[in-house]
Length: 181
Image (cartoon, rainbow, N blue to C red; front, side, top):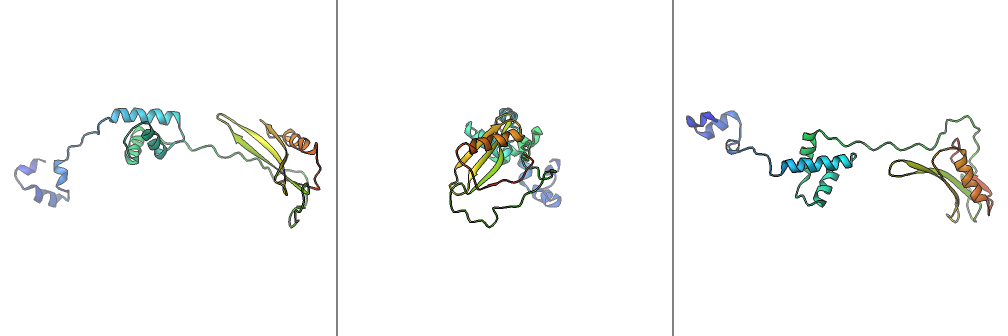
């Protein structure tokens, strides 16, 4: 500050509202900033859904002594924003034209094996894609009676699981969410 030659620093800082320490601060980039930017860019490129917290943890595992605020600042300076993960795939389509059946399981006491089987479809996320899994389970024993794994969500998936389940046993009630499959 050029005024410090004519006026006391305390007076100038009081008049401007600045802290006195700002007169002596030498703004220098922290050591290793270029290497840190390269490391953050490399990790963010390999893991695009990671935010600054996960990037901080990965940098620490690589041996960097760093805190989250510095990583957040570098991420903001690089213009990197974590990509939100893809939304979950909906496996139930209840807006179909097929008939609706009454819920026979509501209020039914399940007291023996093969009294009630329940069916459901879910998906299993793989590295680059996902596959569908149809399962039939005995409610009483919690044993899986039949299952089928497939790449498409069609009737063949559920019929394959049902075929496997019916090979050895027959349920009194078969219950599902009444999706289109």
